[in-house]
Length: 171
Image (cartoon, rainbow, N blue to C red; front, side, top):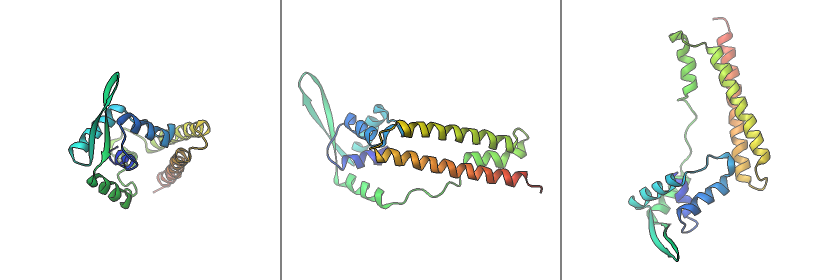
């Protein structure tokens, strides 16, 4: 949440609710909606670390609101974030750990685990398909997010098939 908030503040000053709305509008319903409490806690931490500055803005008849803007250090952090590549492929996969350990424990069957996980992925794909159909077609970011998630799920389903073939093969 830290770096996306900084990136939004690169556009200009904003308060917490504006940042929440910007994220929701940008990412659509496919992305887990940010909690306003989490946003304000993160903004407080960013301010303490010198990446943003906050300024109280008076409002007539309503409580004051705090508007935040990037500091030079915050702008540098956002630029560094955009220059970094994202994480490497998953090699610490919890499901694969279950598959690897199942025969040693005698508590689970690998093929049953694969079938259960496959059902979960297929249900998630159906949910994403419904979400894509309901999502605003003009929100390309949200559509691409959903499409990317579905492509990852398809790759995971293909990988499950490969695992099943490997463990069904006679040793």
